[in-house]
Image (tube, rainbow over all chains, first blue to last red):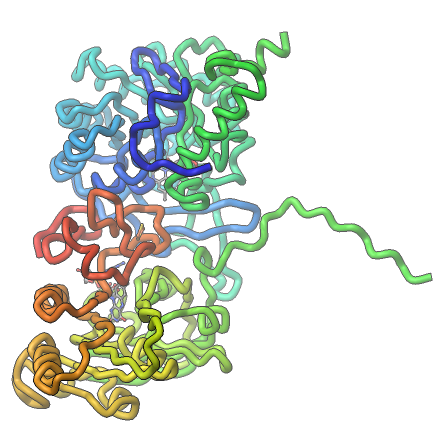
Length: 321
Length: 297
Ligand SMILES: Cc1cc2nc3c(=O)[nH]c(=O)nc-3n(C[C@H](O)[C@H](O)[C@H](O)COP(=O)(O)OP(=O)(O)OC[C@H]3O[C@@H](n4cnc5c(N)ncnc54)[C@H](O)[C@@H]3O)c2cc1C
Ligand SMILES: Cc1cc2nc3c(=O)[nH]c(=O)nc-3n(C[C@H](O)[C@H](O)[C@H](O)COP(=O)(O)O)c2cc1C
Ligand code: FES
């Protein structure tokens, strides 16, 4: 099928999904940290068909991130990264977001910090740029203590409360959870986020991992440890979504981890996600991956005789009952 | 009875491609090319076999950092690759301290290189103009060598601040008849910039009534490239330039090297771009530093 790269197709396929009050034209979202350092990167994914695009995680101060190598591919479809959250600091980043918003993209701002006060300050500045939601990154597995913090209900709760109070109810707050196989802890932290006012849970970030180079006899990444993404983590991410969905959590779930095509996305929807984010897939399939997935969804809907994607969400639970 | 070969079912994807994982290998040769620039030769057969001029590698200095370096030369039969690094900061300082036998990691070949236009109906030889400024010489050396192998005529302009910094001068000299040297201080060749050197050649050609160059390739500091873009317009010269931007991944995932609102990545769609694609980009205007802050050029 011909791939269109203009936005004219956006409303024509009945692929819309709602994350609380926010309606997306389709359920595919660009994940944070991929392409989104500049407005141009966000627009590349938007033109590639994404229903929304998440910015690079930004903090208060400019950070250069970790030394290279910052990425390494591993056998079995995984990518390890230790970028180290490089970012220009929120002030310098605002023009990039504004430019992407002006071009018509649905932009979600991603925030990183150490304590609630930092999250609050960054969120307040992002709130004025035209972003449609805020994603709080409480989960980077290779920077400081961020990773452990994201599984602490008290920390997650404090961060969400501080941000919600500062920016009001106009802009929904999403919380991006760490990659982990400790599902009970993940669920507890997510419930804490919900109780504190979060509008959606995004799961998962990369999983803590390590790759070694046997010739150099040292870690393949400059930072040493890193975060695993790509197809290798998909079953863990699907399980995380499923565990969240079947818990008492009532807010929408956005699935992330290892998505390469339309069937991967349907899997996440069946497990309980209302939308998905895609990171490594952009590297492996190109930036039109979003559009390709939408086309596959149109075919899937036809094959299964459904009008929208809605009946698929949480289908696993219905089918089990 | 011969044992039956077991059927193998594989769930594992093939090993990660050479663009995503380092080939770690000892340095075969280090040579001091100028007071500020050293050249390194290593064995990397996969890269040597597939690289095209203008492509680059991510070079890992274990324990230090990983930095992009253009490929200066390849020996596909021996499997050797060469790059040349100027001493500018932390990573290149460590690189300059390495010796023969030390390990480096190479990831590549990366990006899109120079493209010789396909001559339609025109019999060879056609002529190519190449312009190298400062440490922009490596990809130009590779492009020159490769074009000569394809029966092109190549005129070279090599510019530097001063005579001792004219990188690969001898090798260009062996390759081509027309080597125009320019130095800022006039210690070798004509005093002036590589852009002025290029204009001299273009004028000569025009005056002699010869056909224009079929293409021009250039690499060097961005102000030089900017000057060349202007010149190319004046002389209707099809120009391709190799750009540098801060690179964190080199394969198109991090977005650090993007230069326009369409998301053109220097590491993937570049580093070589036709000059015609550089309108409405950050070319000649701004670049991102290591954090992603925009800096005016
Ligand atoms: C595609 C490409 C090809 C290149 N080819 C060559 C070459 O053949 N020979 C050569 O001498 N240099 C080349 N460079 C430039 C070279 O990568 C930098 O000089 C080198 O990274 C400096 O590292 P440093 O730690 O020593 O300097 P630093 O002190 O870290 O920085 C000095 C300057 O170098 C640049 N730089 C630093 N790190 C990077 C990075 N990761 N990516 C891009 N730029 C960086 C920045 O502009 C910075 O301001 C190339 C750059 C690119 C993008
Ligand atoms: C290079 C790279 C950079 C990333 N940077 C961020 C980031 O800044 N903030 C964040 O919340 N997640 C970041 N992530 C995690 C992704 O957003 C995503 O959660 C993870 O990669 C799993 O999805 P995937 O398998 O589709 O890549 C990054 C991932 C990669 C590969
Ligand atoms: S260096 Fe990462 S996208 Fe180009």
